[in-house]
Structure formats: structure tokens, C-alpha cells
Image (cartoon, rainbow, N blue to C red; front, top):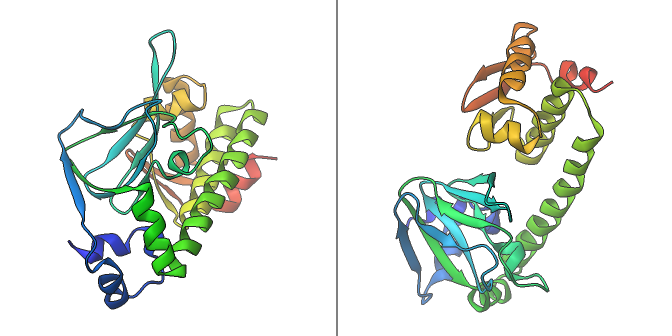
Length: 223
């Protein structure tokens, strides 16, 4: 297995490659390949495993009773899948996790991940930090509902993602249409506001990426 990919995973942050190889020694690695459209974890199935994306990308799709669905996340190499569900009291996956393209995923049973944590406390600390960060960012996303203007919502989301990722260049969650649906605004209106923000020198808008050029200017939009 390519340890360079695993080192991108927050679970193994600050664990040197030599240490990581020793930790994984004797560990049976279950790497599965999923073709585009195949399901990795299914909505409301019993959450007994977590995944680490090695190649490709995995989309989180939330289904609704009326038959509609929404893309809520897009996980890339190094990202974890299903970790909160596997360690929650409900033990159910909150959405479908589906291959956005041909992808390979390292599947870890809950018990295997616990064994890795017991083997090295750095992995346990990274896992706890990751769960806490997800909880914190979910609370931040609730603030999004407090903004009515489309520019305000977009600015807040971009600043939040920049804080979460530690980067100025933000990948859109699947597409502009998906992003608009997540914020409960129309795609044309969002597109228009983003172009205006670009003309004002606040961002560089080149889907599927947006680069923040003036963070203070975005903050000023929030009032």
C-alpha cells in the first residue's frame, strides 16, 4: 500500500512514514475498487466500517422521502468515510456514499480502527480531533441559515471551508448546482453573485474551484 496516500489522511497526521509502516505491519488491508455509481456505504445501513479514500472521489448523497436527493459532500484521497456513523450511538450511515468516479477505498472495520488507536495514541488523538472538528463545523454551518443574501451565504460558506481546510483554494461540493441546493438558493442567482464577487476582486471563480483573493473583503460582506 502507498503510505504517501495514507499520510494525507488526517487519521495519520504527525505519524512518520517509518512509524506508520510499523503500525500497519501484519495488518490485513482490505482495499476495494468501486466503479462510478457503485455504493460504498448505503444510507441507514448498520455502520460497522469506515473507509479511507485512496484514489478517485466519493460523493455523499442524502436521499429524501419524496424521492429527491442532495449531494452533501465530496471526499477525495486521504479523506475518511463514515467515521462519525461507526462510532455514534445510532450506528447508521446518514447518507449514501457513492463512487463519483472509479475509486479505491481502504475499508476498516470498527474493531480494526480501535486496534490501530490502541497501538498508537497519535492515531487516537487524530481521530478525536477529527470528530470534534466535524461537530464544530456542523455548528458553524447552522449560522448559514442566519444569512438571507446570496452573496452573504456564499461568502460565509467560503470562509468556513477555508478555515476548515486551511487553504484559500476551495473545491466546490460536486457542482455549482449542488452548492446552490445546499444553500437553498437558485443556481443562476448564485452564479451571478459569484461573478460579481470575482469582478470586485474578492475571489477567482473557476469551477470546480474558487480561490479566495480577499478574505477581509468577504468578511465585510457579512456585516
